[in-house]
Image 1 (tube, rainbow, N blue to C red):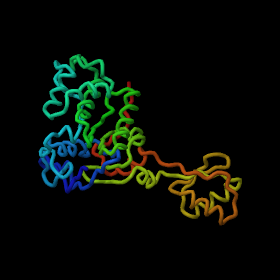
Image 2: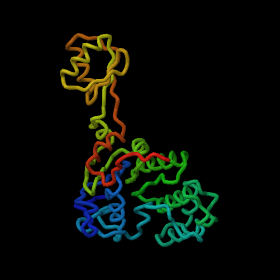
Image 3: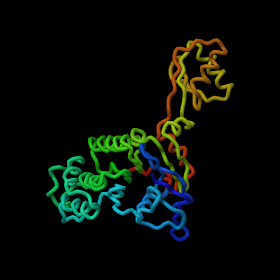
Image 4: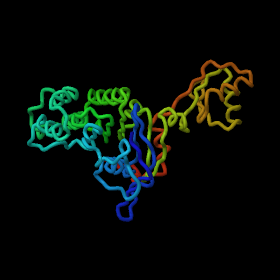
Length: 306
Protein backbone atom coordinates (compact mmCIF):
# COMPACT_ATOMS: atom_id res chain seq x y z
CA UNK A 1 0.00 0.00 0.00
CA UNK A 2 1.10 3.55 -0.77
CA UNK A 3 0.21 6.34 1.67
CA UNK A 4 0.75 10.06 1.21
CA UNK A 5 0.30 12.01 4.43
CA UNK A 6 0.21 15.81 4.24
CA UNK A 7 2.92 15.57 1.56
CA UNK A 8 4.36 18.86 0.36
CA UNK A 9 7.25 20.08 -1.74
CA UNK A 10 8.47 23.65 -2.24
CA UNK A 11 11.04 24.93 -4.69
CA UNK A 12 11.82 28.34 -3.29
CA UNK A 13 8.57 30.30 -3.45
CA UNK A 14 6.93 27.73 -5.74
CA UNK A 15 4.73 25.11 -4.06
CA UNK A 16 4.88 22.07 -6.32
CA UNK A 17 2.92 19.70 -4.06
CA UNK A 18 0.50 21.02 -1.45
CA UNK A 19 -0.66 18.93 1.53
CA UNK A 20 -1.39 15.77 -0.43
CA UNK A 21 -3.05 13.04 1.66
CA UNK A 22 -4.43 9.81 0.20
CA UNK A 23 -3.96 6.05 0.04
CA UNK A 24 -3.33 3.93 -3.07
CA UNK A 25 -4.79 0.49 -2.47
CA UNK A 26 -3.75 -2.95 -3.76
CA UNK A 27 -5.84 -4.87 -6.28
CA UNK A 28 -6.61 -1.84 -8.41
CA UNK A 29 -5.05 0.25 -11.17
CA UNK A 30 -4.98 3.81 -9.84
CA UNK A 31 -4.59 6.51 -12.48
CA UNK A 32 -2.68 9.64 -11.44
CA UNK A 33 -3.80 12.63 -13.50
CA UNK A 34 -3.16 16.35 -13.64
CA UNK A 35 -2.18 19.17 -16.01
CA UNK A 36 1.41 19.97 -16.89
CA UNK A 37 3.12 21.34 -13.80
CA UNK A 38 0.51 19.85 -11.44
CA UNK A 39 3.15 18.02 -9.37
CA UNK A 40 2.66 14.43 -10.53
CA UNK A 41 6.28 13.59 -11.30
CA UNK A 42 7.48 15.43 -8.18
CA UNK A 43 5.07 13.35 -6.11
CA UNK A 44 6.35 10.12 -7.64
CA UNK A 45 9.97 11.17 -7.14
CA UNK A 46 9.32 11.82 -3.44
CA UNK A 47 7.62 8.43 -3.16
CA UNK A 48 10.73 6.77 -4.60
CA UNK A 49 13.16 8.76 -2.44
CA UNK A 50 14.58 10.75 -5.36
CA UNK A 51 13.40 14.06 -3.89
CA UNK A 52 12.98 14.97 -0.23
CA UNK A 53 9.59 16.30 0.93
CA UNK A 54 9.43 19.78 2.39
CA UNK A 55 6.87 18.36 4.81
CA UNK A 56 4.73 15.27 5.33
CA UNK A 57 5.57 11.77 4.14
CA UNK A 58 5.20 9.26 1.32
CA UNK A 59 5.44 5.65 2.49
CA UNK A 60 5.38 2.18 0.97
CA UNK A 61 4.00 -0.51 3.25
CA UNK A 62 4.50 1.86 6.15
CA UNK A 63 8.13 2.88 5.53
CA UNK A 64 10.02 5.25 3.27
CA UNK A 65 11.58 3.88 0.10
CA UNK A 66 15.10 4.22 1.55
CA UNK A 67 14.16 1.82 4.38
CA UNK A 68 13.27 -1.03 2.01
CA UNK A 69 15.95 -3.72 2.26
CA UNK A 70 15.61 -4.96 -1.33
CA UNK A 71 13.61 -2.23 -3.10
CA UNK A 72 13.12 -3.99 -6.46
CA UNK A 73 11.48 -6.93 -4.70
CA UNK A 74 8.85 -4.61 -3.23
CA UNK A 75 8.52 -1.77 -5.75
CA UNK A 76 8.99 -1.71 -9.50
CA UNK A 77 9.12 1.77 -11.00
CA UNK A 78 9.52 3.44 -14.37
CA UNK A 79 9.77 7.22 -14.37
CA UNK A 80 11.59 7.69 -17.69
CA UNK A 81 12.76 5.43 -20.54
CA UNK A 82 16.48 6.26 -20.17
CA UNK A 83 17.37 2.90 -18.66
CA UNK A 84 21.01 1.81 -18.33
CA UNK A 85 24.16 3.01 -20.08
CA UNK A 86 24.06 3.22 -23.87
CA UNK A 87 27.10 0.98 -24.21
CA UNK A 88 25.79 -1.71 -21.87
CA UNK A 89 23.98 -4.83 -23.03
CA UNK A 90 20.34 -5.10 -21.98
CA UNK A 91 20.83 -8.42 -20.18
CA UNK A 92 23.95 -7.14 -18.40
CA UNK A 93 22.05 -4.11 -17.15
CA UNK A 94 19.25 -6.27 -15.74
CA UNK A 95 21.72 -8.77 -14.28
CA UNK A 96 23.38 -6.01 -12.27
CA UNK A 97 20.01 -4.92 -10.91
CA UNK A 98 19.10 -8.50 -10.04
CA UNK A 99 22.31 -9.21 -8.14
CA UNK A 100 22.17 -5.95 -6.19
CA UNK A 101 18.66 -6.84 -4.99
CA UNK A 102 19.24 -10.57 -4.37
CA UNK A 103 16.96 -11.55 -7.25
CA UNK A 104 17.69 -14.84 -9.07
CA UNK A 105 19.52 -14.04 -12.32
CA UNK A 106 17.18 -16.42 -14.16
CA UNK A 107 14.60 -13.65 -13.89
CA UNK A 108 16.54 -11.56 -16.43
CA UNK A 109 15.59 -13.65 -19.45
CA UNK A 110 12.09 -14.19 -18.05
CA UNK A 111 11.30 -10.48 -17.89
CA UNK A 112 12.92 -9.83 -21.27
CA UNK A 113 10.56 -12.42 -22.72
CA UNK A 114 7.61 -10.94 -20.81
CA UNK A 115 8.13 -7.47 -22.32
CA UNK A 116 8.82 -8.74 -25.84
CA UNK A 117 12.60 -8.29 -25.85
CA UNK A 118 13.55 -11.95 -25.55
CA UNK A 119 15.86 -11.89 -28.59
CA UNK A 120 17.53 -8.56 -27.83
CA UNK A 121 19.32 -9.21 -24.53
CA UNK A 122 22.78 -9.16 -26.12
CA UNK A 123 22.22 -5.85 -27.90
CA UNK A 124 23.64 -2.56 -26.65
CA UNK A 125 21.04 -0.29 -25.06
CA UNK A 126 22.23 2.56 -27.28
CA UNK A 127 20.88 0.72 -30.34
CA UNK A 128 17.36 0.50 -28.89
CA UNK A 129 14.47 2.58 -30.18
CA UNK A 130 12.44 4.67 -27.72
CA UNK A 131 9.80 1.94 -27.55
CA UNK A 132 12.42 -0.74 -26.86
CA UNK A 133 13.99 1.38 -24.10
CA UNK A 134 10.53 1.81 -22.62
CA UNK A 135 10.03 -1.97 -22.64
CA UNK A 136 13.46 -2.45 -21.05
CA UNK A 137 12.50 0.00 -18.29
CA UNK A 138 9.31 -1.97 -17.69
CA UNK A 139 11.38 -5.18 -17.60
CA UNK A 140 13.54 -3.64 -14.86
CA UNK A 141 10.39 -2.71 -12.92
CA UNK A 142 9.10 -6.30 -13.17
CA UNK A 143 12.45 -7.92 -12.32
CA UNK A 144 11.80 -8.52 -8.61
CA UNK A 145 8.16 -9.58 -9.13
CA UNK A 146 7.16 -6.64 -6.90
CA UNK A 147 3.82 -6.14 -5.17
CA UNK A 148 3.79 -2.43 -6.10
CA UNK A 149 4.24 -0.95 -9.60
CA UNK A 150 4.75 2.77 -10.24
CA UNK A 151 4.72 3.99 -13.84
CA UNK A 152 5.03 7.55 -15.16
CA UNK A 153 3.76 7.76 -18.77
CA UNK A 154 4.37 4.05 -19.49
CA UNK A 155 2.99 4.12 -23.05
CA UNK A 156 5.52 6.71 -24.30
CA UNK A 157 7.17 5.39 -27.46
CA UNK A 158 5.03 2.26 -27.64
CA UNK A 159 3.15 1.31 -30.80
CA UNK A 160 -0.52 0.27 -30.78
CA UNK A 161 0.32 -3.34 -29.91
CA UNK A 162 2.61 -2.14 -27.12
CA UNK A 163 -0.08 0.12 -25.69
CA UNK A 164 -2.56 -2.78 -25.61
CA UNK A 165 0.12 -4.98 -24.01
CA UNK A 166 0.99 -2.57 -21.18
CA UNK A 167 -2.72 -2.00 -20.51
CA UNK A 168 -3.25 -5.74 -20.18
CA UNK A 169 -0.13 -6.10 -18.03
CA UNK A 170 -1.26 -3.45 -15.53
CA UNK A 171 -4.75 -4.87 -15.25
CA UNK A 172 -3.43 -8.41 -14.83
CA UNK A 173 -1.00 -7.33 -12.08
CA UNK A 174 -3.78 -5.50 -10.24
CA UNK A 175 -6.10 -8.50 -10.58
CA UNK A 176 -3.38 -10.61 -8.96
CA UNK A 177 -3.33 -8.24 -5.96
CA UNK A 178 -0.61 -5.75 -6.88
CA UNK A 179 -0.81 -2.02 -6.24
CA UNK A 180 -0.53 -0.25 -9.62
CA UNK A 181 -0.04 3.54 -9.60
CA UNK A 182 0.24 5.03 -13.08
CA UNK A 183 0.50 8.57 -14.42
CA UNK A 184 -0.57 9.42 -17.96
CA UNK A 185 -1.81 12.29 -20.13
CA UNK A 186 -3.70 9.90 -22.43
CA UNK A 187 -7.27 10.14 -21.15
CA UNK A 188 -8.73 7.50 -23.45
CA UNK A 189 -6.09 5.02 -22.34
CA UNK A 190 -6.64 5.81 -18.67
CA UNK A 191 -10.38 5.34 -19.11
CA UNK A 192 -9.70 1.85 -20.50
CA UNK A 193 -7.20 0.93 -17.78
CA UNK A 194 -7.79 2.55 -14.40
CA UNK A 195 -10.22 1.50 -11.66
CA UNK A 196 -9.48 4.46 -9.38
CA UNK A 197 -8.44 8.02 -10.14
CA UNK A 198 -6.32 10.58 -8.32
CA UNK A 199 -6.48 14.03 -9.93
CA UNK A 200 -4.29 16.92 -8.78
CA UNK A 201 -3.90 20.50 -9.95
CA UNK A 202 -1.27 22.99 -8.82
CA UNK A 203 -0.15 20.43 -6.28
CA UNK A 204 -3.57 20.11 -4.62
CA UNK A 205 -5.85 17.08 -4.58
CA UNK A 206 -8.88 17.67 -6.82
CA UNK A 207 -10.42 14.20 -6.86
CA UNK A 208 -9.79 10.74 -5.42
CA UNK A 209 -12.55 8.36 -6.41
CA UNK A 210 -13.53 5.43 -8.58
CA UNK A 211 -13.54 5.85 -12.35
CA UNK A 212 -17.29 5.20 -12.43
CA UNK A 213 -18.03 7.89 -9.84
CA UNK A 214 -15.82 10.49 -11.51
CA UNK A 215 -17.57 9.91 -14.84
CA UNK A 216 -21.02 9.85 -13.27
CA UNK A 217 -20.34 13.19 -11.53
CA UNK A 218 -19.57 15.02 -14.78
CA UNK A 219 -21.89 17.80 -15.88
CA UNK A 220 -21.29 16.55 -19.43
CA UNK A 221 -23.44 13.48 -18.86
CA UNK A 222 -26.61 13.65 -20.91
CA UNK A 223 -29.74 11.68 -21.70
CA UNK A 224 -31.00 10.92 -25.20
CA UNK A 225 -34.77 10.64 -25.31
CA UNK A 226 -36.98 9.88 -28.30
CA UNK A 227 -40.74 10.43 -28.36
CA UNK A 228 -43.49 11.19 -30.92
CA UNK A 229 -44.40 14.08 -28.56
CA UNK A 230 -40.91 15.56 -28.54
CA UNK A 231 -42.05 19.21 -28.65
CA UNK A 232 -44.23 18.88 -25.54
CA UNK A 233 -41.49 16.98 -23.74
CA UNK A 234 -38.84 19.55 -24.67
CA UNK A 235 -40.95 22.35 -23.22
CA UNK A 236 -41.54 20.44 -19.99
CA UNK A 237 -37.85 19.64 -19.59
CA UNK A 238 -36.82 23.26 -20.18
CA UNK A 239 -39.44 24.41 -17.65
CA UNK A 240 -37.86 21.96 -15.16
CA UNK A 241 -34.49 23.67 -15.67
CA UNK A 242 -32.78 21.24 -18.05
CA UNK A 243 -30.84 22.25 -21.16
CA UNK A 244 -32.15 20.43 -24.22
CA UNK A 245 -31.04 20.20 -27.85
CA UNK A 246 -32.57 18.40 -30.80
CA UNK A 247 -30.54 15.35 -31.79
CA UNK A 248 -32.96 13.99 -34.39
CA UNK A 249 -36.46 14.48 -35.77
CA UNK A 250 -38.04 13.00 -32.64
CA UNK A 251 -35.03 12.99 -30.32
CA UNK A 252 -33.58 15.29 -27.67
CA UNK A 253 -30.26 15.41 -25.85
CA UNK A 254 -30.79 16.54 -22.27
CA UNK A 255 -27.68 17.80 -20.48
CA UNK A 256 -26.88 17.07 -16.82
CA UNK A 257 -29.89 14.77 -16.45
CA UNK A 258 -30.55 11.13 -15.63
CA UNK A 259 -32.89 8.70 -17.39
CA UNK A 260 -34.96 8.49 -14.19
CA UNK A 261 -35.59 12.25 -14.10
CA UNK A 262 -36.40 12.53 -17.81
CA UNK A 263 -38.56 9.43 -17.78
CA UNK A 264 -40.40 10.69 -14.70
CA UNK A 265 -41.34 13.96 -16.41
CA UNK A 266 -42.55 12.10 -19.50
CA UNK A 267 -44.59 9.73 -17.32
CA UNK A 268 -46.27 12.61 -15.47
CA UNK A 269 -47.38 14.04 -18.83
CA UNK A 270 -48.50 10.65 -20.15
CA UNK A 271 -46.06 10.83 -23.08
CA UNK A 272 -44.87 7.73 -24.88
CA UNK A 273 -41.09 7.18 -24.88
CA UNK A 274 -39.43 5.20 -27.66
CA UNK A 275 -35.84 5.59 -26.43
CA UNK A 276 -34.28 6.67 -23.15
CA UNK A 277 -30.54 6.22 -22.72
CA UNK A 278 -27.68 7.71 -20.74
CA UNK A 279 -24.76 9.16 -22.70
CA UNK A 280 -21.87 8.97 -20.25
CA UNK A 281 -19.20 11.68 -20.36
CA UNK A 282 -15.72 10.64 -21.41
CA UNK A 283 -12.83 10.82 -18.96
CA UNK A 284 -11.41 13.67 -21.04
CA UNK A 285 -14.60 15.68 -20.47
CA UNK A 286 -14.73 14.91 -16.75
CA UNK A 287 -11.02 15.65 -16.34
CA UNK A 288 -11.35 18.97 -18.17
CA UNK A 289 -14.09 20.02 -15.76
CA UNK A 290 -12.06 19.02 -12.70
CA UNK A 291 -8.90 20.81 -13.79
CA UNK A 292 -10.38 23.89 -15.49
CA UNK A 293 -9.27 26.21 -12.67
CA UNK A 294 -5.86 24.56 -12.21
CA UNK A 295 -4.13 25.16 -15.54
CA UNK A 296 -0.75 26.88 -15.51
CA UNK A 297 -0.26 26.73 -19.29
CA UNK A 298 -3.29 27.97 -21.21
CA UNK A 299 -3.03 28.59 -24.99
CA UNK A 300 -4.49 31.91 -26.08
CA UNK A 301 -5.33 30.93 -29.64
CA UNK A 302 -4.49 28.88 -32.68
CA UNK A 303 -1.42 29.83 -34.68
CA UNK A 304 -2.03 29.23 -38.37
CA UNK A 305 0.78 27.93 -40.51
CA UNK A 306 1.96 30.31 -43.24
